[in-house]
Length: 604
Image (cartoon, rainbow, N blue to C red):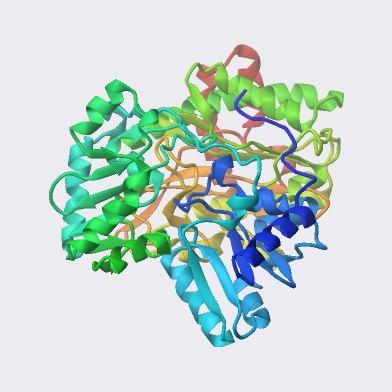
């Protein structure tokens, strides 16, 4: 199995580890330090070697930061983790704050004193972050100290070793474009910005550019590495040579100069000494990268990572692979749903056994490389924790009379999937049906949206919320995220969210996942993946519009639908969607599952 259900919490976190860190800070003459949930690549998935926030506080979520001063401390998380953080972290030591509504900048501004020194690891904080931190320190009469090493590492006695997962070549038959062609495309983008070179810090950008995949972090085939791409000539790839077999090395040496990660800073300094203009993404590159270039005499060209958009806009080969992967995944999922409906009423299932069974069905496809994230398997109150991670300590039985939420995904070589379904177990209340249907209405609104070119995800996000808002309800996460092509299940820059400012383009893949989570009771979320379609004329319209193609083909649970709350158009969409599911997935499953599917997709 790909998922471990071990309890990741550490009873020694909190006060003991905070005391160790404060002693180390005192030894270094520092009055405070920030510990983000980040590594030097600013990625969502961090290897155990870099899980400093978890070591310090016990928090295992994918976003957060702790601030430690000599007389105060706090942990900051976003809305997905407001419940989880209180379950995992000692609130006496690290009181929880909302990362957006009560940001660390305001907390520091209220507590820093003149003459104090606040330390940060220069590789773990971006150029953009550091500018704001410097302003805060200057206003308080304090000093921001950028460190070349991390004080946490000095006191973390059993810190894991860095990963050395093996790298593989991703065939052009799946990538749809040769690596050399991609490099030339990015070099043209660098030249357009009047830069001499670009620094790439994101492992998924590097994987896409060189048509490689890795195995350094759980559930995402990333090779942790850095790269520099000159406007002309060969790029340089800074990667631990132990990750490269001879055959992979033979492919890469034709594309790039290979070097060890320990040589990365020297490579940056060489650009500076040559007086080069180096392109960096200020939202992704650590301040240590920028300083290495400018301190050696170079200058910076600040711009978005030039790989992000080409990677996000999938080519026809990648889109074909995604569609095939989703059909394969849907067949496994329908088998799972049929099994769940048969077993759940018996009262023996729990969150772990359900997650394991779903993974088994995907393994039986013979194509599964990994799950794309730890399955969120939430019964009752655990379903209300948006990014809940089931462990043997938290594992609940699937209880009758409440919705069960399961959010999961798969990594296949031809595509990455991500799907959430909320399932009825026994009779559910009218209120539960109402909440489910309001979420469904938002989901349908996104799926059927038509929008002009240049429209951003932020402009569409409201569509998913408007019916919830009318009922005085909302959800505290984005409506959708980008999804990679056998890469990260969360991919930027495209988003359906209040902060999603990137215009949507044909070929992008995004999730569509509104939800509602009454705390301590249950959770509801419905998630399909959507491809942004090419602009089309609408009869009577005066401009072409984009739309979405739904590629997830798994039934919605009709037992949770209050049909009286649906418009005729919404009911027609649901019936049409279920008809497509029945026609495309029915032939791929067994006789028992086909009978179940006929019932699950009946017209309403």
